[in-house]
Image 1 (cartoon, rainbow, N blue to C red):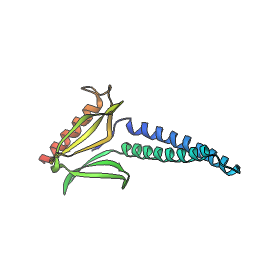
Image 2 (cartoon, rainbow, N blue to C red):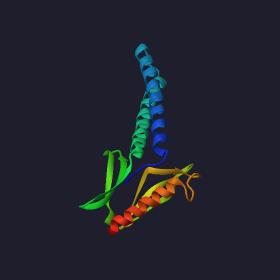
Image 3 (tube, one colour):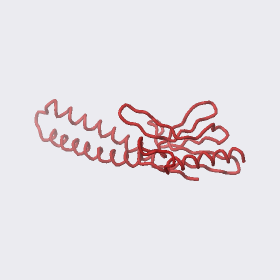
Length: 167
């Protein structure tokens, strides 16, 4: 079973790509201005460094968006069923966390509260109590209600994990 639903990944991908283009353009224009000047001003150098740093930060947003666009996969191989969740970390890049279904306590939809915004996320709780949050299945704060497509999808995934644990 493959599960992917939510606009979080696409939004980050588009926002990050546009930001990379804007900051890369600024860096190119400022870099060109620096190469043409005999005496470079301090603000020009600050603008070049700032736009380069913001461009790199935008690339991280793009990578997080790419990670969220990848599906959650439930495999039911004869060797054992496992739930594979896409992740992005600075150290390893785009990776997957594979959790055997025997180690899963619960699969649910939980609200992630942030300072000015929030979103619903797929949360896999392990038997030891640790949580793995995944943005491949997300929903906006106001749009996820009982009976919505996202809720039904998470409930179906929960039922599939329970069936794999039994069987």
